[in-house]
Length: 155
Ligand code: UDP
Ligand code: MG
Image (cartoon, rainbow, N blue to C red; front, side, top):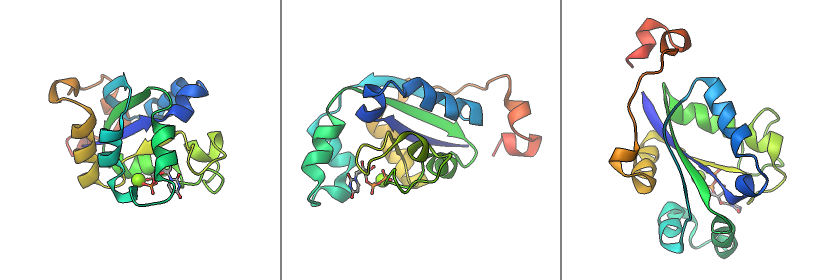
């Protein structure tokens, strides 16, 4: 199973969408492996958004991501990275498909409710960036045999 990183951004916290968004992931069958609130700072955001530091909108993105504390969540499941990305939708919320989190809850390119890791390699780096090892929990919910077929459970 994979573990992926989700951040409920200040746009989610400000608009009191944390419960609704987390509930979608739980109802899908993803397992919460770690969860906490934290205030991001420029140092961690320059690492996390290293691919964007030279873009003109980066100062605005920095301010946006530091506007309130965020909720960081590690979600585990089979193909969790791909599943969570598809549930998240396109970066620009106005273009994100209805049924996705950004498509249903957002109107903005920047204030787009959630971050989700884009590849398994980045997911591993991002989970380690935001969580200490002892903050990630390995347990098997009793519903697992109803969520997965027997040949999927140990993949
Ligand atoms: N972003 C923005 N303007 C852009 C592109 C990105 O404000 O033109 C912000 C937006 O909040 C996005 C984040 O920067 O979620 C990270 O961008 P990325 O391209 O990694 O998109 P994501 O992986 O979040 O869909
Ligand atoms: Mg990205």
